[in-house]
Image (cartoon, rainbow, N blue to C red; front, side, top):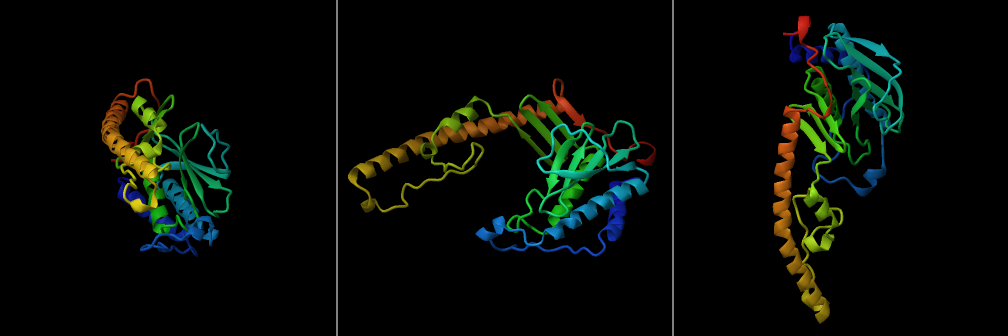
Length: 286
């Protein structure tokens, strides 16, 4: 195996067999918002079996190409248990030194075919797919299959990294996808204490939101008493007073977090890191 393209071709070939009898589907609402009842409905939980079929295709291809040894019904130690019950596990142990194992956990839930992707030993949860299988969150089978491929390729190509120190965590899934949390400074904590009406934000708006909700002129003035109009006037002024410094603080905090993340990724001393080299390196790689 010499390239990612060849490996993906092997996975696609294996998927023809593992996915036999299963059918993909289009986004059920490509040009409209989901209806309210779709958020609590799972019309066809069996359709998600296509995810397990794709994961099995990955395991078959990794074994067939000699990149890994596949183990079934493994008794794992999870660093933190997945948020969903796992009934059985398969693990791919790469043959190249310095790499990390890939884990697929088959879940027990109303979503028939959901999977947990994990890495390392003890195993770190990378992602649960689908994140939500309700009709409203369904964007079609290709989206979740592409997401699964992206996460697995990140591990196989040696791009995956998870850094943790205290409450701070940085995860690099691929070169194009990463996330972090726990980097709120004093300003972030301060703005969480400020009432939403004071900064023109709805209660559901987080400190990382880019937008503000204002309602200064939505209701005709005649609907309010003089004292009510005065209170609305004061609230509007206070919103404008707080909005600019909050936006400035947010932008400054965002730049500061980015620098902190870049520094940690470049020099992870003091961080607990889970990562590994590419499975394609060594005798089978380029």
